[in-house]
Length: 355
Image (cartoon, rainbow, N blue to C red; front, side):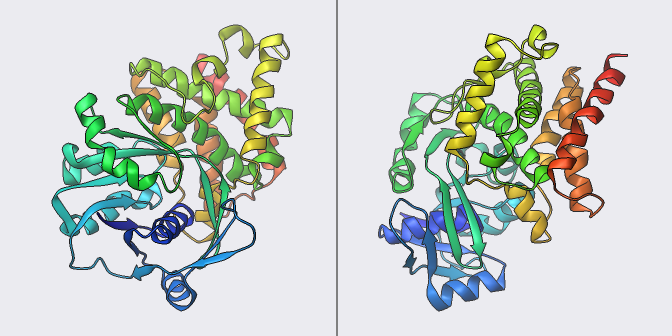
């Protein structure tokens, strides 16, 4: 199986390194000359993957999509670049090949419009990675994937994904699912909270979730996501052993409480999540620092737009989206103080929505 990885940021770099190290025929594509130069000179420097020290992995890197044909294209760009990447890679995809969306958010529909739904696969990523410098990558959290076909799927669809799952097993355990939407929405709820709050707070997840008010912000953001997903008829599912979003979402009573046994349990769960992914840093913040477009419109923005269509207020996601764009435009700094400002602003938005 010939593999083409589109994008060589944190996830793309670690994916390429582990596939190449395992002997797979993999090529990675990047438009970033510094990254390409670094990999050509010294290979991919990989840290934090359960091994002691640092290791270098030789991998083939290209700056233009090659004229060859590939059986599987792994789309590892940020969401704002996924459609461009799919169009660029389409001529290199074999007739019976597949593109796999590694992005957070709900990107499968966008890719399916370009290559066809029958060739579109979703991989919900339940592990973390970061690019520390061009060609230098750190795996920040362990985990695997939930792999599913786009749209309505059945057992034959999931069985057809077996060869792709076998390839990805070198990165982490792969679960085949016939409810990709349920997995996607659960991950979207988590990402809308931790990626946006990580961007606004400017710190790693473990440090931020030590603060009770940050955990409360996360609960509010995730609750809005769950309500919108339910309105769309989505049956939420856990992703690789992560939290049960249906349980974690705040009830009507809990929204007006400052303390209760159920709230204590939910805060404890977020503390556990913060510990497990303590080294994880927001990919949106990394994108902003590199001068790239943050994916907030594909995360919180997706929830806001779909919420409006369903008649569900999403004041926390609206406020978080606005704050991230202010940071991207240089009108606001990432800091804990910015997160503190988010609470009263969201409360005012909520009051306006309910007026």
